[in-house]
Amino acid sequence: MTLPEGHLRGSAGLSLAISLLLASCLLSDATAQPPLPSVKSDRPFAPGERFTYVISWLNITAGKAVMEVADSPPIQGRAALRLLTAATSTPFVSRFYPVDNRVESLVDAETLIPQRMVFRRREGKRKNDFDVVFHQSEGTITATKDGVTDKLAAPPGIHDSISSLYYYRSLPSLVPGSSQMVTVHHDKKNYKVEVRVEGLERLKGPWGEVETVRVLAIMPFQGIFLNEGNIQIWLTNDARHVPVMMKAKVVIGSVVARLVEGFRVPTTP
Image (cartoon, rainbow, N blue to C red; front, side, top):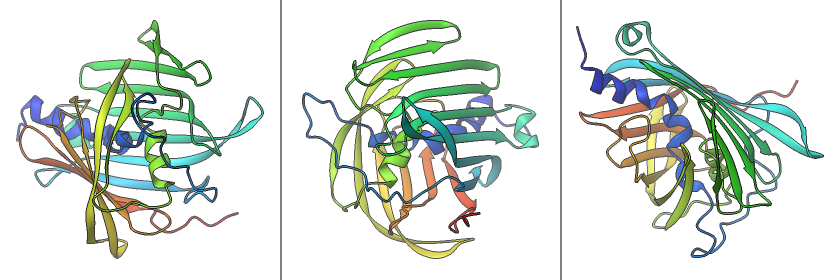
């Protein structure tokens, strides 16, 4: 069986959907939007949390993605966290379109504001290395892609595509019917994104049956998974806001990431 490369890119390209599906939770344009709510002082995640997802397209298992939270040495005297995401394609898909993507975001442990993001992208013949440093006090970003560095303006408090998901999970509540325009930094550009909290929905999985909050992000760019604009994510409707499923429309059908391991709260050593 041979799959067209464009469609494989759509399926394997969801390798970073875990980190980009909620790019909608970044800071709004500071000159036009009210400030976002503060995160909870008692975060719904901690070092040791690890989620594993199976990624599928048209009922074909395309890959696996892992999200985890780890400790980090302090940054400028402040406690920090390492947010890690890795995604790889299955042996079958790798025959046509191999994927091995790895992202690390260093964030302030209290505010979840990013300080630096390193992204190693390996998708098919595409190989990119990103190193993004956030100068939050200056309102600028130093972005290096494949050895070429640019300094860009950015709204104060802007997040990267990894930290945004954890920031969103830390919001006190997600109210169905609410909507806002936000800004996301991706590949040396800042984008405005509309995010809508669509409603409540019950889902079943390896973790049982749970009530979730369904969120829709309308993306103004295709990103790395050739989505056609709409990306959905289902978060548990509780204090943890666990992302149990994500879906992105592609050229044909949809690519889906489903949580298969890590739903239980990790045990503190």
